[in-house]
Each structure stands twice: as structure tokens, then as C-alpha cells.
Amino acid sequence: MKISATIITENEERNLPRAIESLRCCDEIVVVDCGSTDRTVEIARRLGARVLESEWRGYAAQKNWAAEQARYDWIFSLDADEALSEALEGEIWQLKKAGPSCDAYTVPRLAQYLGRWILHSGWYPDRKIRLYDRRKARWVGEYVHERVQTQGRVGHLRSNLLHFTCDSLSEHLRRLDRYTTLAAQELVARGDKIGWRRLLFAPLWTFWRTYVFQLGFLDGFEGLTIARMAAIYTYLKLAKARNMSWNR
Image (cartoon, rainbow, N blue to C red; front, side):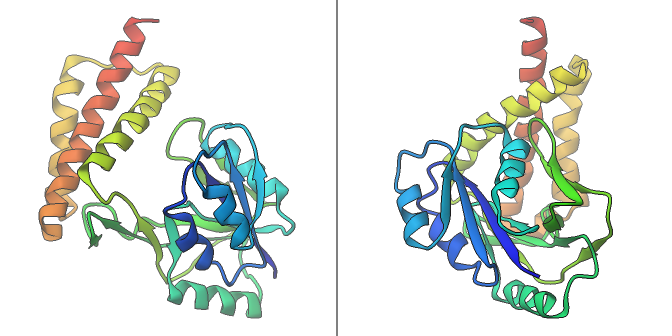
């Protein structure tokens, strides 16, 4: 069992070394870059990755294209702000030695937010398929929240994939603007109707669900911030979709 790791990048010089250095269990690393203006490409090549440059296709399409360029059929798809934990690396070494019994594997994703590991707030275990046989699985999703879809058997690894999210509230707000625009475009494309009741109550429910039902209060100040940002995300997504529909 040989594994190609794939990473899509744009201006990821801060995160990329940590991501690449965690992939010692993989047999090659493919970095697909779409126009970085920082040292991303230089760093990737220095750390032994095979770098390909490509125009932006969208998240799912870009990841599928990266998988198509790999030498091996088994793919571990890693985002630049993620890294394998030592335990996950060891688990993959064992899987390679024993051989796969499934066509794709999920991993639990543990996020660090404002310097704190988040264990609640709907953020953990946040299982995602990241290790898969490209002959039986592919990425789907035209806008945001892309995911791997497979018709084969899915197994589950135990150890954490580490996700290093926002170091500051300013960084989180910048991401909110980008992702809410994409999410709004998806709503418009689906023909969703956004009424004032949904605009009013959906953000309130999002906060209540995140902070209370998903135990965000156990994550301290960071949990409160996550709940408030989730409510803001919901409101901006809906408000932008409503505005886009009016302007069509």
C-alpha cells in the first residue's frame, strides 16, 4: 500500500512546513499551488514535495485534480493548515503494513482555535474522509463544505488529525467574509428563499445549539466566541444570499 499525500495551496508559507513534515508515512507529497505570491512554492520544493501550478477550479475540483496527478491510487488529502498527529502517523504506518480492509478511512479532526484545543462546540470529533482509494472515491461539492464521496466500504481511524485554525479574531473575520459569500452563492444556486423570519431566528438557533446543546460553554471564552461567530456566519450567509437574489 503506497500513499500519495496531496495539498492544495495559496500563500501558505506559514502553515506548509508543519503540514509536510507530518507526512513521513506517505510515499510522495504533491502540492498543487494556484498562484502564491509568498514562499509557498519554494518551501514545498525544499521540503521534498512535487509542486504543480494550476489555476483555481474550486475546492472539490482542485482536490480531485491534485489526486489525478498523484503516482499512487491511495490518497491522503491534507489541508495546508492541518497536520498528522504522531499517533495518526503511527496508525497509518500500521495500516500500510497490514494492508487496507476498506476503500476509504475517516479521521477525527481536533481543532486549535485562538491557541486552545476545542473539544466541544460541534467541532470534535468532526470526522472526515481523508484517506481514500481514488478509484472508488472523489471530492464533491461546488462551493463550500466539500467532502469525499465513496461507494466503497468506509473504515475509521482512531487518532487525531490536527487542524490549526485561526490565531486571531481578525483572521476569523476575514475567513467569514470569504466563506459566507461562497455559502450564499450555493443557497442562490439551489433556489433557497430567504425570508425575514429565517434571517432573525436562524442565527439565534445557531448560537443556542453551538453554545448549549453542543456544550460550547465547556470550551471557555473560546467556546463563547465560536458560538457567536457561528451565529454571525449564519446571518451573513443568509443576508448575502437574499441580497444576491434581489440583484439577479
